[in-house]
Image 1 (cartoon, rainbow, N blue to C red):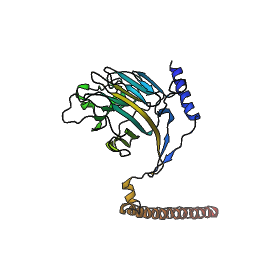
Image 2 (cartoon, rainbow, N blue to C red; image 1 turned 180 degrees about the vertical axis):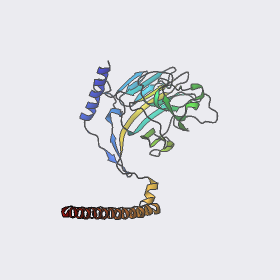
Image 3 (tube, helix red, strand yellow; image 1 turned 60 degrees about the vertical axis):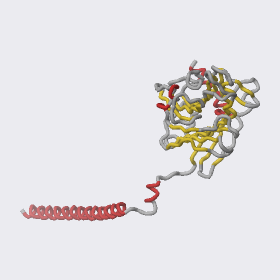
Length: 325
């Protein structure tokens, strides 16, 4: 079973490499981006055999090849998911997803989630996916249970260690890594999007588009990002309870990022124009020490030569005395 799964993953990766190459680009900051077909979703979503080469889907998920991937319909007690078949192994990446949350009535719920986890395609109680996950979850929560002082919809990140549980009764307040309120993200008048950018050990940033098209709102950013599992699957899931909504995924664009510029430490850059006083002093001490060592070696050399000459002279004198007698 393990061998067949590994061979399947290798075959899919080989197909990605063998396929037509997508164009890469480099921005003004020197960040080169290369599209990843293995983690990208675009219309018509399915191949000629009505299957997706790179993603599996299940639950109540419906695929409309010309419009959307609907994780849940506007009906109670539904859950649906879609997960990549191969893990996202890039060190640095950017994921941009266009989605749409909409439905009828004044009451609605519950929301959807974006996942980068070791687990995949496992239905559960956390926005349609499994609890106690290992990795990163981004929750687009549209229904407020019990979180005083917080405006909903609310978008939050949770870092799972495989043990920590998501508490629905408090909307995950105790397990929140970072988050932001995003009133207007449901039923938006412009295409609603989320862009998650990750540089390993450097930064994690989530931006949202829901107010004005092509205007990104910063949800959160940190220079101390969590550790994403080296083998993490990209997925999306949603659920409805007594209240419901349509949760649609319109497109997913994933890119591998490379920093083409050499970044220097600002503290080092300040010292770069010239040596510091301490370095100058050290250089003088080093130069002085070098001359002292040279003089010492010269003195030792002459001492050895002089000692040899004295010894040789004494030996010759002794030899002459012995011949006389």
